[in-house]
Length: 127
Picture 1 (cartoon, rainbow, N blue to C red):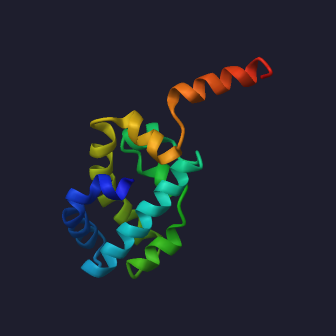
Picture 2: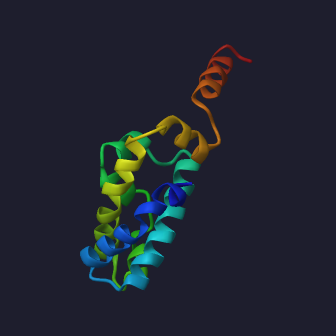
């Protein structure tokens, strides 16, 4: 879902990751693919605060992802991963903040805001 959302900016994001992290285009492309997949997994599992992403808070990502694994894709360690995520954050924030953010969140989590609210009320009243 995020990959589709960012598809029109993929080349620019790969270039930014490559430049910022001092990695090859191939490494940056691989990093982007894996990072997006991991971010989608975290959002879907409810382990990543969407509000933090909308604010551009890179620490929301860095505290939730395996930086060592991501950094190794870029030919380094955690610092490379943080640089790569920093380059990804701007376009990600732009896309999440624009358009149908509620629809995107529903697509990533499989849950709708209305359904969540009603489900929460049902639990509160023992149903």
